[in-house]
Image (tube, each protein chain N blue to C red):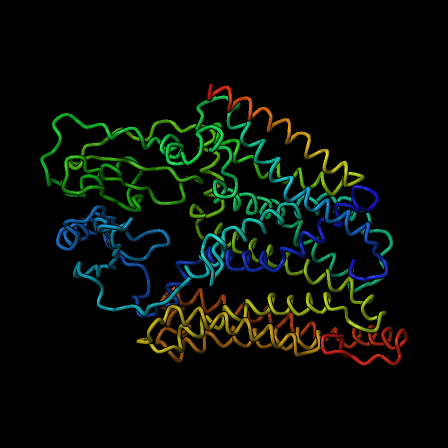
Length: 100
Length: 539
């Protein structure tokens, strides 16, 4: 990876893009999953919140693995971005619903 | 990206491991030492009496209560820690009420002399002890604790990813064992790394995930935010731990200032758990009408921490913990698995060995990165800056930290007892030695750097028992016959560590001519005119 001749700029950008998708995107997705699970898991809300948070690092790891195993960086972003946006929308609706 | 899942995972494993490797090495090694934090502290305070004291719990409790009533009448909280388990002393501690502008009041602790019931005569030297290593494990050092916790947390997440991607990669590697492997040196390192990783895989996975769980609400607070709202953490914790429910006031509350003898609480707790099973008694709000006395059970009967009984000031039992939720039980278990308080001696040593294996796994992974790339560097005739940096950081960390820890123990014995900020200077000595090792690694050719620093580390550990013999009267000749296992165990462990490091240095020296000659031959063949740079393979 360190030799200058063997690695194209395109490859470097691809790796950078996946890193951002995995670390940043993966964190946002994990936060969204945790937030939604804390609201939806059965039982007392303290227990649901605790369970959701306990599981969060497993989701994060899956997101990172996805970002580096899928064929293209675009797919990596889509696989993380789309569910994050959907869950974000659920949270927005819930928040507005609770506020109204 | 690479073709194929296995190649992708191998790439991810390599780079996630490299980026976080050095911090993980520090976390693993200091965490492994922390399994014996109390024992290390004991060695670092040789003024304290040798072995555990034998004092009937009832007598100990009455002694402690007398002392507390005399010294800490106005305190908010009292705790009596009874001798037993890994704790050899009878000690009392109390927290004074918080003064204006303070969050907590002053905390004081005394070890009591079982003969007199007064504070022990021997004043132990001030030391960071094993707890300093324990703190470095998750707070690092020379930075705000919060930064350290974030850095360690991020690196732990890298570790989790490296473990999972390593397992996915490894499936195929196992098949590759029986096929084509040209370079022996690299193959040996790979085999070693695989063996260490697979040998204790459940431990590695458990310790990494449970480590993340310890500070999980700091790393991932969004579950609380979504179900409780912004800045409502306290509400969540109160609900989670049933704190909001007031202590049921029993009919006919005892009059102000009354605290029944704690022996009655001890007797009730021992009746429930068996004799010698009470680890500590603590009193909240002594001298008020809602005094609560909590008896805590000795570790070891269960993995997760439960086993508490509560009483009012007159010694009447209050209702015990209501049934815990499932998530609470899982959380408590994961937390306890990481801390390992429940582990008795055999299991504690097994955890320690697993920790060493984990440390070695990280180290061999880091070394493998360089071994794999050395032929390419030699072929190019010059060492790429990044490669040289990794080589130096590897020596500087993998040998540098053990050297630093040895010097920390040396400093404990050699620094003047009355030295101002003694505790800080012990730590400074550790980091200065570590830094010097790193500088040394930069200045020496790689293989020589490894060998020479390993010999130095080996000598520092092997000579520690001798230093102990010169500076205290509790050397192995005394501690072993006396059954003083705090001293003897530490000294013997240091000898074992020193011998292992010496064996590593010796092996490296023996193997050097073959590997280095081959590398040098290749280097000469590829670039006959190249002059060796300091960080290059020795010619």
